[in-house]
Image (cartoon, rainbow, N blue to C red):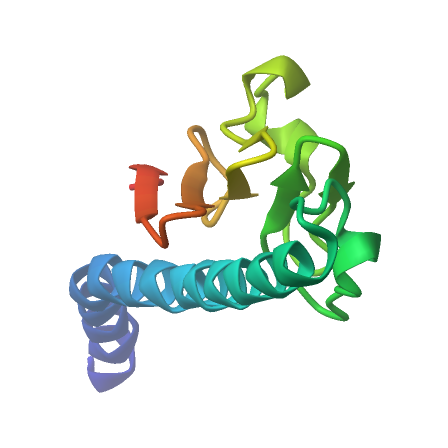
Length: 138
């Protein structure tokens, strides 16, 4: 009887713990996006100081992360997720990526499918240092 109770208790435990753990895991993944968008904001400001315009590509910023869960998007460039799911899993057409560029401002986007279902988690950072969670992957 004891051997039968153990798997049942484990299953019940997992049922109650899993939703909380998945939310915790998603929040941890979102920290990558927030950290990198803040870093990219600083790189864009430095680039603007040196060139009197904002960078259109990550190469101009000298930024190429080794292991990223999120895909990062500038109007002229995309760095695909190397560790997470690729942008194709998000089913967002490129023309709808929430990023922008002008001589006086920019918006960088970070997109990730944190839990392998629809929809994707989308964060943006603009030239005014406004970090916005455009859409939360529940």
